[in-house]
Picture 1 (cartoon, rainbow, N blue to C red):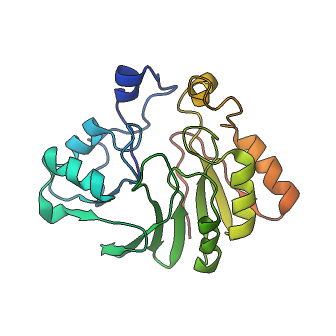
Picture 2 (picture 1 turned 180 degrees about the horizontal axis):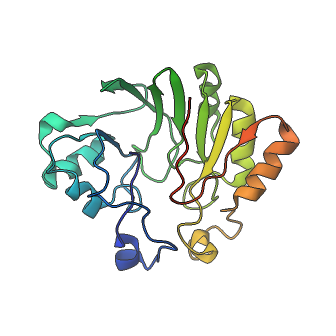
Length: 225
Protein backbone atom coordinates (compact mmCIF):
# COMPACT_ATOMS: atom_id res chain seq x y z
CA UNK A 1 0.00 0.00 0.00
CA UNK A 2 1.37 3.42 -0.99
CA UNK A 3 0.41 6.73 0.66
CA UNK A 4 -3.05 5.69 1.89
CA UNK A 5 -5.28 8.64 2.81
CA UNK A 6 -8.39 7.31 4.57
CA UNK A 7 -9.19 10.16 6.98
CA UNK A 8 -10.42 13.75 6.77
CA UNK A 9 -7.27 15.30 8.25
CA UNK A 10 -6.77 17.63 5.28
CA UNK A 11 -10.25 19.05 5.72
CA UNK A 12 -9.85 19.39 9.46
CA UNK A 13 -6.46 21.07 9.30
CA UNK A 14 -6.36 22.77 5.87
CA UNK A 15 -9.96 22.99 4.65
CA UNK A 16 -9.40 20.51 1.79
CA UNK A 17 -12.58 18.44 1.58
CA UNK A 18 -12.25 15.08 -0.13
CA UNK A 19 -14.50 14.40 -3.11
CA UNK A 20 -15.25 10.76 -2.34
CA UNK A 21 -15.23 8.29 0.50
CA UNK A 22 -12.27 5.93 0.88
CA UNK A 23 -12.91 2.78 -1.19
CA UNK A 24 -11.61 0.58 1.66
CA UNK A 25 -10.96 0.92 5.38
CA UNK A 26 -7.97 0.06 7.55
CA UNK A 27 -10.00 -2.86 8.94
CA UNK A 28 -10.72 -4.29 5.48
CA UNK A 29 -7.13 -4.37 4.26
CA UNK A 30 -4.03 -4.67 6.42
CA UNK A 31 -0.96 -4.55 4.16
CA UNK A 32 2.22 -6.54 4.63
CA UNK A 33 4.14 -3.52 3.38
CA UNK A 34 3.17 0.14 3.85
CA UNK A 35 5.09 2.67 1.76
CA UNK A 36 5.05 6.43 2.34
CA UNK A 37 6.72 8.87 -0.05
CA UNK A 38 6.77 12.00 2.15
CA UNK A 39 5.24 13.74 5.13
CA UNK A 40 2.37 15.83 3.71
CA UNK A 41 -1.03 15.19 5.28
CA UNK A 42 -2.52 13.42 2.25
CA UNK A 43 0.43 11.01 2.07
CA UNK A 44 1.48 10.54 5.69
CA UNK A 45 -2.05 10.35 7.09
CA UNK A 46 -1.60 10.12 10.85
CA UNK A 47 -4.92 8.37 11.66
CA UNK A 48 -4.17 5.75 9.01
CA UNK A 49 -0.53 5.35 10.00
CA UNK A 50 -1.54 4.99 13.65
CA UNK A 51 -4.14 2.34 12.78
CA UNK A 52 -1.50 0.15 11.14
CA UNK A 53 1.00 0.49 13.97
CA UNK A 54 -0.63 -2.09 16.23
CA UNK A 55 -1.69 -5.10 14.09
CA UNK A 56 1.91 -6.36 14.06
CA UNK A 57 2.15 -7.65 10.49
CA UNK A 58 2.82 -4.42 8.60
CA UNK A 59 6.30 -3.06 7.86
CA UNK A 60 6.68 0.63 7.02
CA UNK A 61 9.24 1.90 4.48
CA UNK A 62 9.46 5.71 4.30
CA UNK A 63 11.88 8.66 4.32
CA UNK A 64 13.64 9.30 7.64
CA UNK A 65 11.38 12.18 8.68
CA UNK A 66 8.37 9.89 8.32
CA UNK A 67 9.81 6.91 10.17
CA UNK A 68 10.63 9.22 13.09
CA UNK A 69 7.01 10.41 13.16
CA UNK A 70 5.74 6.84 12.85
CA UNK A 71 7.81 5.85 15.87
CA UNK A 72 6.07 8.55 17.89
CA UNK A 73 2.71 7.08 16.77
CA UNK A 74 3.52 3.68 18.23
CA UNK A 75 5.42 1.86 15.51
CA UNK A 76 8.11 -0.49 16.86
CA UNK A 77 11.61 0.01 15.46
CA UNK A 78 11.66 -3.59 14.19
CA UNK A 79 8.95 -2.76 11.64
CA UNK A 80 10.38 0.55 10.44
CA UNK A 81 12.87 1.08 7.63
CA UNK A 82 14.06 4.53 6.56
CA UNK A 83 14.89 4.89 2.86
CA UNK A 84 16.65 7.66 0.98
CA UNK A 85 17.19 7.89 -2.81
CA UNK A 86 19.29 4.97 -4.03
CA UNK A 87 18.64 2.79 -0.98
CA UNK A 88 16.72 -0.49 -1.26
CA UNK A 89 14.98 -2.94 1.05
CA UNK A 90 13.07 -6.19 0.57
CA UNK A 91 9.97 -7.48 2.29
CA UNK A 92 8.07 -10.63 1.40
CA UNK A 93 9.38 -10.89 -2.16
CA UNK A 94 8.91 -7.20 -2.93
CA UNK A 95 12.07 -5.20 -3.51
CA UNK A 96 11.68 -1.45 -2.95
CA UNK A 97 14.18 1.18 -4.07
CA UNK A 98 13.76 4.83 -3.15
CA UNK A 99 14.15 7.14 -6.16
CA UNK A 100 14.80 10.84 -6.60
CA UNK A 101 11.96 13.33 -6.15
CA UNK A 102 12.01 17.14 -6.20
CA UNK A 103 9.23 18.28 -3.93
CA UNK A 104 8.50 20.92 -1.29
CA UNK A 105 9.76 18.56 1.44
CA UNK A 106 13.50 17.82 1.26
CA UNK A 107 13.42 14.06 1.83
CA UNK A 108 10.47 13.19 -0.42
CA UNK A 109 11.07 10.08 -2.53
CA UNK A 110 9.65 8.07 -5.39
CA UNK A 111 9.41 4.29 -5.26
CA UNK A 112 10.62 1.59 -7.64
CA UNK A 113 9.05 -1.77 -6.81
CA UNK A 114 9.93 -5.17 -8.23
CA UNK A 115 7.23 -7.77 -7.57
CA UNK A 116 6.99 -11.15 -9.35
CA UNK A 117 9.25 -9.88 -12.12
CA UNK A 118 7.15 -6.74 -12.75
CA UNK A 119 8.76 -3.35 -12.21
CA UNK A 120 6.47 -0.58 -10.97
CA UNK A 121 7.57 3.02 -10.53
CA UNK A 122 5.57 5.42 -8.38
CA UNK A 123 6.81 8.98 -8.87
CA UNK A 124 5.63 10.24 -5.50
CA UNK A 125 5.05 13.98 -5.46
CA UNK A 126 7.66 15.65 -7.66
CA UNK A 127 8.28 18.44 -10.08
CA UNK A 128 9.77 17.64 -13.47
CA UNK A 129 13.54 17.26 -13.18
CA UNK A 130 16.27 15.86 -15.40
CA UNK A 131 17.22 13.35 -12.70
CA UNK A 132 13.89 11.59 -13.21
CA UNK A 133 14.90 10.66 -16.74
CA UNK A 134 17.43 8.21 -15.31
CA UNK A 135 14.49 5.88 -14.81
CA UNK A 136 14.59 5.13 -18.55
CA UNK A 137 17.36 2.63 -17.82
CA UNK A 138 15.33 0.79 -15.17
CA UNK A 139 13.06 -1.12 -17.56
CA UNK A 140 9.85 0.06 -15.89
CA UNK A 141 6.74 -1.90 -16.83
CA UNK A 142 4.16 0.41 -15.21
CA UNK A 143 4.73 4.05 -14.22
CA UNK A 144 2.40 5.91 -11.86
CA UNK A 145 3.03 9.63 -12.43
CA UNK A 146 1.60 12.71 -10.68
CA UNK A 147 -0.05 15.19 -13.05
CA UNK A 148 -1.83 17.91 -11.08
CA UNK A 149 0.67 20.73 -11.62
CA UNK A 150 0.46 22.39 -8.20
CA UNK A 151 1.96 22.09 -4.74
CA UNK A 152 5.33 20.91 -5.99
CA UNK A 153 4.12 18.49 -8.67
CA UNK A 154 4.71 18.33 -12.40
CA UNK A 155 1.79 19.29 -14.61
CA UNK A 156 0.00 16.98 -17.05
CA UNK A 157 2.14 18.01 -20.02
CA UNK A 158 5.41 17.60 -18.13
CA UNK A 159 4.20 14.22 -16.88
CA UNK A 160 3.41 13.16 -20.46
CA UNK A 161 6.90 14.23 -21.55
CA UNK A 162 8.45 12.20 -18.72
CA UNK A 163 6.36 9.14 -19.61
CA UNK A 164 7.48 9.44 -23.22
CA UNK A 165 11.11 9.59 -22.06
CA UNK A 166 10.81 6.66 -19.63
CA UNK A 167 8.99 4.39 -22.10
CA UNK A 168 7.07 2.17 -19.65
CA UNK A 169 4.72 -0.43 -21.07
CA UNK A 170 1.80 1.22 -19.27
CA UNK A 171 1.46 4.60 -17.60
CA UNK A 172 -1.10 5.53 -14.94
CA UNK A 173 -1.76 9.23 -14.18
CA UNK A 174 -2.33 10.02 -10.51
CA UNK A 175 -2.68 12.79 -7.91
CA UNK A 176 -5.92 14.34 -9.14
CA UNK A 177 -9.60 14.15 -8.21
CA UNK A 178 -9.24 14.04 -4.43
CA UNK A 179 -10.13 17.74 -4.11
CA UNK A 180 -12.21 20.15 -6.21
CA UNK A 181 -10.28 21.78 -9.07
CA UNK A 182 -9.97 25.11 -7.26
CA UNK A 183 -8.16 23.45 -4.35
CA UNK A 184 -5.47 22.16 -6.71
CA UNK A 185 -4.67 25.79 -7.48
CA UNK A 186 -3.43 26.15 -3.90
CA UNK A 187 -5.00 29.53 -3.19
CA UNK A 188 -3.69 30.99 -6.44
CA UNK A 189 -0.14 29.65 -6.16
CA UNK A 190 -0.83 27.25 -9.06
CA UNK A 191 -3.33 29.06 -11.33
CA UNK A 192 -2.61 26.68 -14.22
CA UNK A 193 -3.03 23.43 -12.29
CA UNK A 194 -3.82 20.42 -14.50
CA UNK A 195 -5.53 17.66 -12.46
CA UNK A 196 -6.96 16.26 -15.69
CA UNK A 197 -6.07 12.73 -16.85
CA UNK A 198 -7.63 13.39 -20.28
CA UNK A 199 -5.14 16.23 -20.86
CA UNK A 200 -2.30 13.92 -19.84
CA UNK A 201 -3.49 11.15 -22.16
CA UNK A 202 -4.04 13.43 -25.16
CA UNK A 203 -0.61 15.04 -24.72
CA UNK A 204 1.11 11.66 -24.48
CA UNK A 205 -0.79 10.43 -27.55
CA UNK A 206 0.85 13.21 -29.58
CA UNK A 207 4.29 12.05 -28.43
CA UNK A 208 3.72 8.32 -28.71
CA UNK A 209 0.25 7.13 -29.79
CA UNK A 210 1.21 3.51 -29.05
CA UNK A 211 1.93 4.04 -25.35
CA UNK A 212 -0.81 2.57 -23.18
CA UNK A 213 -2.49 4.88 -20.67
CA UNK A 214 -4.65 3.39 -17.94
CA UNK A 215 -6.94 5.85 -16.14
CA UNK A 216 -8.15 4.21 -12.94
CA UNK A 217 -11.49 4.66 -11.21
CA UNK A 218 -11.82 4.86 -7.44
CA UNK A 219 -12.28 1.36 -6.07
CA UNK A 220 -11.31 -0.34 -9.33
CA UNK A 221 -9.14 -3.45 -9.15
CA UNK A 222 -6.53 -3.99 -11.86
CA UNK A 223 -4.38 -7.11 -12.16
CA UNK A 224 -0.90 -6.80 -13.66
CA UNK A 225 0.79 -9.87 -15.10
